[in-house]
Image (cartoon, rainbow, N blue to C red; front, top):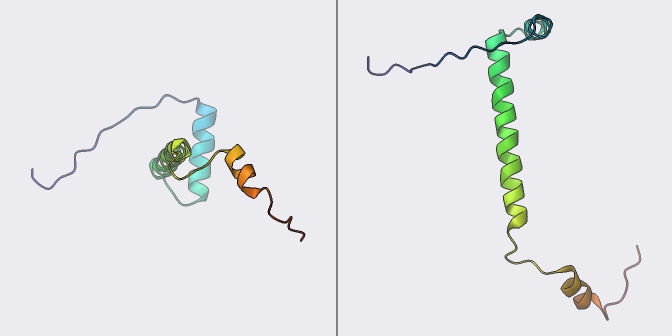
Length: 82
């Protein structure tokens, strides 16, 4: 059928105590367990992507200078007092 989205089911084995806590927490927020878990997975995925991108940007040294070069450039400048 064109135009339909294929969904995949994933079965998760969790302890009954954790399941009960999850179900209660989701219900208190007016959500189903599926909705709450989907939101949690998306949030975690976005955090992981942001962390990866942040680490990658730290490795980018273009336009930066070493601490030694910075300190050398600051020599001779008057000290700032605030």
